[in-house]
Every structure is written in structure tokens, then in C-alpha cells.
Length: 311
Ligand code: SF4
Image (cartoon, rainbow, N blue to C red; front, side):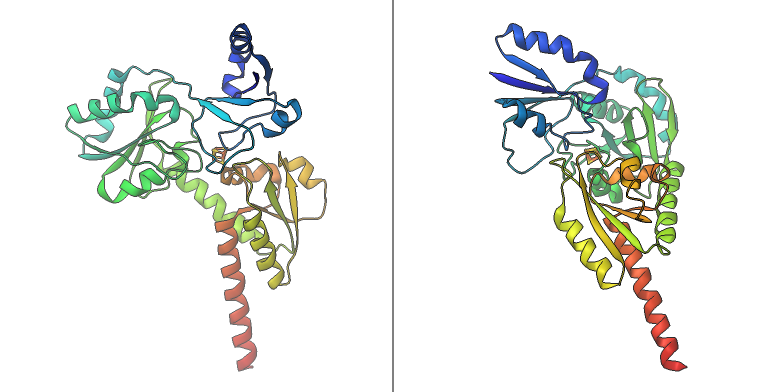
């Protein structure tokens, strides 16, 4: 069988070793060398050109819900943690009885063990799955719906993982406490979540002065959303704002800015790209942010019209 192996950046180091394993089993093997950001990002281009029979996608669970032209096998990659070390979280949640428990797919195989640990320490633990994140308690950078579902029933959310990418997706009003599986540190991350939201608000306000909008469409299979882009185009044009749809697999700030035309970008691809506003040097708005902008513009127009009627 002809197989294309695909890895997220952190697992590419395992690529050669795994290629040899599949080859020893009699397969013809290729390694995708493109960047891979998530299970939204399946290497279909390489697979088509190489005419492979199957893609083996490592490190993520299934994300794309529609049928793909090439079979994809998802191989989750698990990292064990020492669950006893979660004891360091307990002093940070002593005033809370009910907690929402969340983690990434890498630690999801120990979810029940973690849950039991907190239950044995007197906590009631709740967890739900999200839309894309299909395991209980699983959080993706674009999907912490599971934690939003339990927010009303718990006193705090505990996130077990590493790095800030995932916990920053947990947009809830309750305290969010993160346990870092690598260095064992524990901290509340609500301030950082609030800062991210503030940056998004600032981008919306900056966009109020913009006249030319580049609407970004990614051809990554799990990020492609032409319907949203067409909607954005129609709504902007209705308000006499100029715009064009920009399509690419990798939406790089440097390439987009080479158009030298747009003073604002609208993003229909990975919603976490807006965290990198600074790299674009211009406001970058997700669709929900664009909606807010349009509401402000409409509100301003209404006031102007009312003033004109009174004068
Ligand atoms: S956060 Fe972005 S890169 Fe990650 S799964 Fe969601 S869309 Fe893909």
C-alpha cells in the first residue's frame, strides 16, 4: 500500500523511525513535510500528487466531519503524566467543590484516572465534549465548548496540559486553573484570557477606520469556509467597503501584505490566527469580530442619519 505519514511539528522527529516501521511491513511510504497545525489540516495535496492509498495522521483525533477523497487513519499520540503530581493543584482549588476538568488529546487516555484523583480528594468533577473536540473534557484551540457547557454547574475549571494555546480557548467567567504537565507549575490564567479578548476588541476598533478588506479563505480541508467568506464580502460591500477574497493553503502575513492594498483582514480559517495580530501589522478579524464591527458601523450610520433628520 502507498501511505503518506503526516505529523504535527512536535512529532515530526518521530517521522523517519515510523517511516522505516511501515516500510518494513511492506508499504511504500512518504512523509508530509508541510507544516501541520491540527487535524483540520490534512495533507490532501501531497496525497493527491503522490497518489497514495491512505494518509496516516499522527497526534490528533478526527476533526473533519465530511467525507475526504482519501482514507485517513488517525493515530493519537499519548503522553503519560504522573497523576499523583496533581496534588499540587489541590491548594489552588480548596475553596471549590465542583470542578470542570479539561485536557488535550495527548493526555485524554488518563482522563478517567485524573477525574478519579480529584474525586478521591473530595471534588465533584464534570466534563463534556465539544463540537470538534469529541472526547469528554477535551479542549482544542478552537473548541472549548465542553467547558462552556459545564461552566454553569461548576465553581472552577481545571486544565491539565502544557503551553497556553489550549487553556486560552477556555473563554468562561469562572476561574481557570492550569496545571503544566512539564514543569508542574499551577496558575490561574483568567487574566491572560481577558488580555486576549481585549486585543480582539482593540482590533475591532482599529478596523473602524479601514476601507479595504482582504477576506482570507484557507484551502486546508478543516478550515475551508467559502460560505463565510462570501457572506463577509456581501456584508462589507453593502456598506460601501471594498473587499476581495484571498485564498491560500498557508495564509502568511508577509504574503498577504505583499498585496499592499488591504488595511484590514477578515479571517475565515483557524480562529486562533487572530492571536497573531501583531504579525499582520493590521487588524485581523474573525467572523464574530466582523459581526461586531458591522454592528458598530450600522449604529454609527443610524446616529448620523438621525442627526441629519434633526438638522
Ligand atoms: S485551533 Fe486552528 S489549527 Fe487547531 S484544530 Fe482548530 S482550526 Fe485547526
